Length: 200
Ligand SMILES: *[C@@H]1O[C@H](CO)[C@@H](O)[C@H](O)[C@H]1NC(C)=O
Ligand SMILES: *[C@@H]1O[C@H](CO)[C@@H](O)[C@H](O)[C@H]1NC(C)=O
Ligand SMILES: *[C@@H]1O[C@H](CO)[C@@H](O)[C@H](O)[C@H]1NC(C)=O
Ligand SMILES: [Cu+2]
Image (cartoon, rainbow, N blue to C red; front, side, top):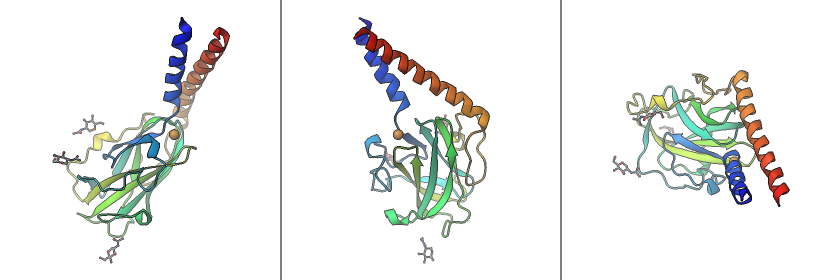
């Protein structure tokens, strides 16, 4: 009877290993995993009804990643209704070697026209080996972004996010923990496949 149960378990295990990422803060324009490969904003071409106030200094974007390892770039487009070609200024980039939450620092100090009250759109391009994956957040740049939730900046490996525009992600010590977890999941999946083959 476990034969009926095992495929379900296997499917569950695969789901947690595959997947892409979600932008969790500031709020995304929209998320549809199947359209995340579509630039410039993951298949969402209309500007959000509500912009989030975003600080000109020490801003960040928080994501939740299913992939355990990835590189990313954050671009900004200044203006109310940016087109794909407008996302030209790189305001953050790096690589992360652990899954789940990560705080991507945004450095606006060298962006032309990034001034108090300016509407803008931040774009993440995430690369984990299954295509460029896009997410966007529509914001208003502010000297004082009093509603901006600074508590949302969390790294799942416990490292404190760097203040610079490009973070290099995790410390070497934490990557081994993530690798161990992943190896454990892979091992469990292999065992399930073997036991299914044995019962079939
Ligand atoms: C935008 O904000 C208004 C006022 O806070 C709220 O009523 C509305 O539901 C929001 N719309 C969206 C799409 O979040
Ligand atoms: C920046 O501001 C200048 C002067 O106001 C304007 O001519 C230019 O188009 C702006 N650039 C962008 C990218 O908005
Ligand atoms: C800010 O972010 C933290 C961490 O994600 C969350 O627990 C908290 O509810 C958020 N606060 C607001 C006001 O949304
Ligand atoms: Cu993926």
